[in-house]
Length: 380
Image 1 (cartoon, helix red, strand yellow):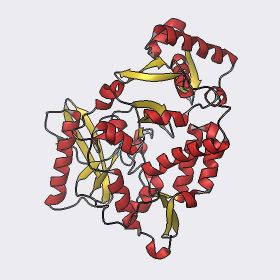
Image 2 (tube, helix red, strand yellow):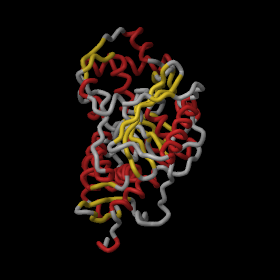
Image 3 (cartoon, one colour):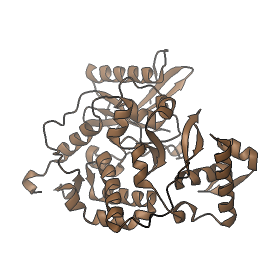
Image 4 (cartoon, helix red, strand yellow):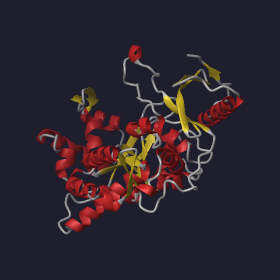
């Protein structure tokens, strides 16, 4: 792209917001348009997947994804992170191969997994506690935590493509056996087909998080290789040809990438003046490198930081007003009432416009959470 046609940084920022926060639509259409919705179990004040969808689905309510999941053509799966994606995408992720999910399993664990798989086939929809009660697997150390061994085996079989999540009960996954799982390897698949699959998956990533600085694209490619390690070489090959696959330009000394055919400087990318509370996993703010380039300050999720070291709060959500992220909000429900605590990078905006936008955003959050009691504010 000619430097004369390169967009400015403010144009890239406007493009990023407008293309991701599209006009509210139906739940199936929103998931299809995003391509992937990252999940997180923490409720602050609702799960990340619900708060992501609330910004893009008309009249969405907390927990709606879980309630409607069994009837929707979507799946829970590990992609670049764990989340929800259209069912047809699974064909691109699998087969992951026996070395991917089972490489950390010794012979004893492998045998246990086979027993669990047979149990789910016979038992039908299965919760981790059903497996634990039947086998008494105990607990294991994993990722620095004390983990239920049955949960570990079920998650491994799910990652492997031998189980799927049929539904959730109060947030807990209920697993179901896949009657015709993907084979471990497809000997007839040639290199060209594998490369095409890797390209489609990376296209999904770029579509979701564009525009991307080159360093962020590289980081996402590493995450994708973790998600599809059997296609790691192909993902690396697609990444090496990123400049021929994606539109790109140098802006303020950095290389940026976005999908072919999209023009970040186009007038169609307009941002409204709504105020939005964005979960840390929302596509608009997910890339912390890009966040700092766009808004000039460092944002960190501090949920796992000791309380006395937190600067923003337990689950500080970036507060987007128009094109600017001027601070953050900590929201929680206490005795049926939504409490909010705001923080600002600079001073709190003066005048009525901000207060009107804030009041409307809090009202929408109450409706999303289905609360009826008035909002209360805690001043920092």
